[in-house]
Length: 130
Image 1 (cartoon, rainbow, N blue to C red):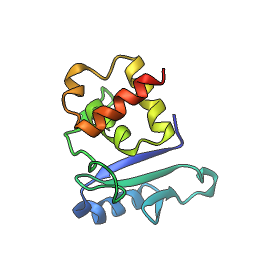
Image 2 (image 1 turned 90 degrees about the vertical axis):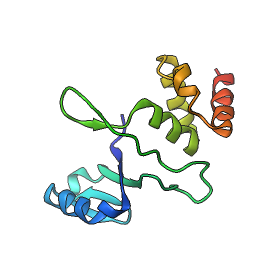
Image 3 (image 1 turned 120 degrees about the horizontal axis):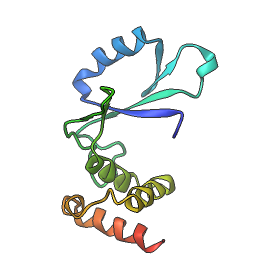
């Protein structure tokens, strides 16, 4: 639903990712890859390093679970990882995404059990805003 995506990789794979994205028509700009074609200016791939915090004061590092493979062969993060990342970032748009996931009943009791106390407190706070 957004013009960009977050791409989780191990920091040790950065050079290989750079080569692959450049072959695909992207150029690196800071921690992002953007289409070299200026007509797609808003399209970007933002890199996040798994098992590391995005911001130093984040509650948790980016999870590194095995990706889920869609029927089209696309690798995506499992819902449990999305919940952890959204509750860690906790920007307004992340809170809305948590509400959407919760409304769709994708935040199961099993996922709740994986949450640390601070993340569980944030989930309860988001739920109280309905």
